[in-house]
Length: 330
Image (cartoon, rainbow, N blue to C red):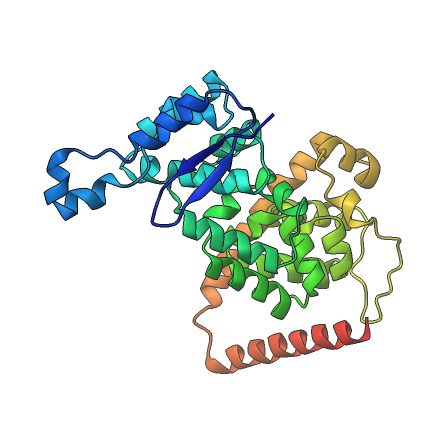
């Protein structure tokens, strides 16, 4: 069976989208030719010509791309209801890029349903962002899985992704491969506040004694800082977790990070904390009250003299130096 190609002209270059069957050849030809027909008045109006040359979204063209009738209608209605004209203008080129990734029509529709903002991203930006992800170590298969799991990654500017990866390498000292693994398993880190991200890392490293490899293996960055702190503090107060000393030693055997951050609260309580849900709920409320009081005290002490601030700066510097020395030894 010969493969039919639907030609999409979004700019002077041409993008070809492979169809999934040979049906509707005549319709595909009409879809392509209709997009090139301009009103006679446009011939004498260069501005009008520029406005009319973007692809025309139509149900026949979506059907020729391999979507079912219901899928085509869903896409068409989503674009029609979108505010502004950018969604209609870029829809076909967006579909072209997603098909070129090797995704099938059903997968493409799921992506667009999860992340409608993709409709408004230009083809050139999509290509740049995909190219950058390839440079970060995402090959065929892993790239498709990343986009399928978190399509919003294609809405993030290249500069933002680069800053996030640089932060993970320079501030948290993850390796290049570990950064790729973090982006694969926890791609939302590119959207997270850097200060919160760094605090979560330092909390796990200093308070819990968790090294980078374990953080990556057990997907630390999928959990919120609040959840991490609550569960760790609960175990600590019950004598089931202890902050390692400068040599990494503890008097108790600390549970692995995956048991602490188990997505199922019941499993965490049964397998790590040996406690009831009622006990944990009471503790969380008490901890929240303690943190609020600490914040108030911190606010009251913010007007202390420069000597106190200097001491705090020295402590912070000493802590960072200790962290880097521990990293070199590990």
